[in-house]
Image (cartoon, rainbow, N blue to C red; front, side, top):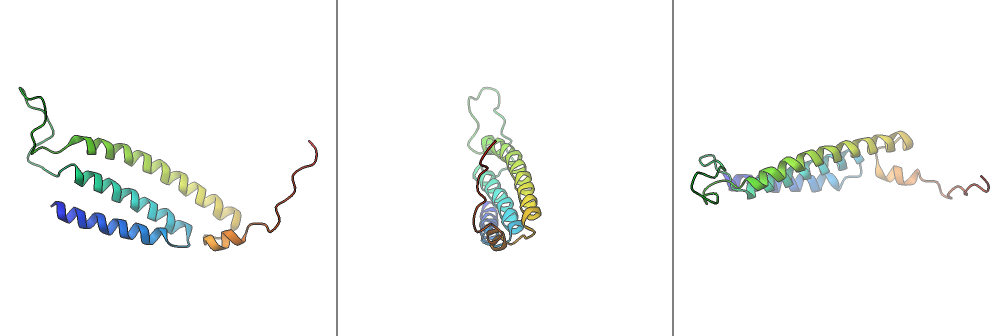
Amino acid sequence: MEPLFAILVGLFFSAAIYLMLSRFSIRIMLGIAVLGNAVNLLLFTSGRLTREVPPIIADGLDTLPSSAANPLPQALILTAIVISFSFLAFLLVLTYRAYQETGADDTDDMRLAEPVTPPSPPLGY
């Protein structure tokens, strides 16, 4: 099961890098979202995937048995999902505002939309 998840993580990372190398800001944003999911899946896979033994410490033991899944990556993933969702919402608003200001989704057009000479600062208040 874990080799399958390792291949899936590799596919997610390659798709994320492909999307982030694009000129379009929406594709860049989607690449960042896929990259976050790839990291979450990598953390989940690193915590051992077992269905048979739940991560519960039995009576009389001080630690988890070695065959149990590690609960720490699962807790880290829950936190990472919340953080990545808020980061994605911020990127969505930032991309939308950039599109409103420049009228383009292409990052090259956004770069060319900058003024050649910056406006002079106000002389008085």
